[in-house]
Image (tube, rainbow, N blue to C red; front, side, top):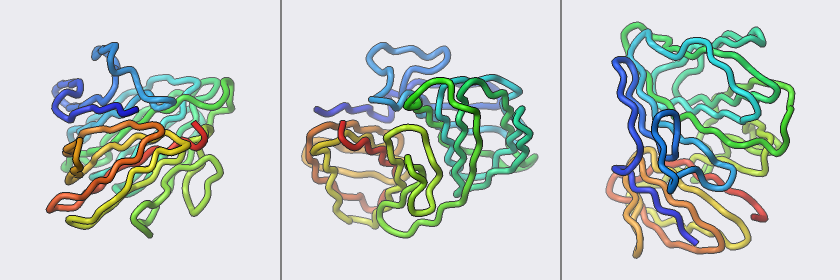
Length: 230
């Protein structure tokens, strides 16, 4: 089973200080055909103007992962955390029983771009928590977030592993969904195969399938979400 989400069909939010692309239904953008994939409910690709951002707002019973692509976020929350999360770093919030936070572009001159990912937790009512880390690319697939925090990754309360996939130009890769489910989100570059052409912003979900893909002339950077035993 394949689920294909072309980049150009994503939802859009356009405000004076915020430009967003939504892979799944979010906020005022609603599409019953795109409500998430497995436990993955949100992928927002956000561009935030210098000095602007999201004022205090609340979340609960959600695992929220932010991956900073350029610039930096200034994060504050009611747990007492006040940190700057810079490009290349990953942030994980466990909203649990409730967390209130704000996130602003930490720069007054440079724009901010980051991916915000929401994943349903494996149980409700967890204690709120926060973690951030810079994760160095060590292989083709580098774990950013895992259930057990292995290989220097952040820990998430769900049976999902989030990898950063990086391929050189024309490098081949096999998407193996046998005995598992997976979702691929392209950040930069592209992948192509016999059935799909995946450009920046596109997504591909799969279960019990194997797909051969090859990076384009510029290579590819992507997030790969993998559920074991699903």
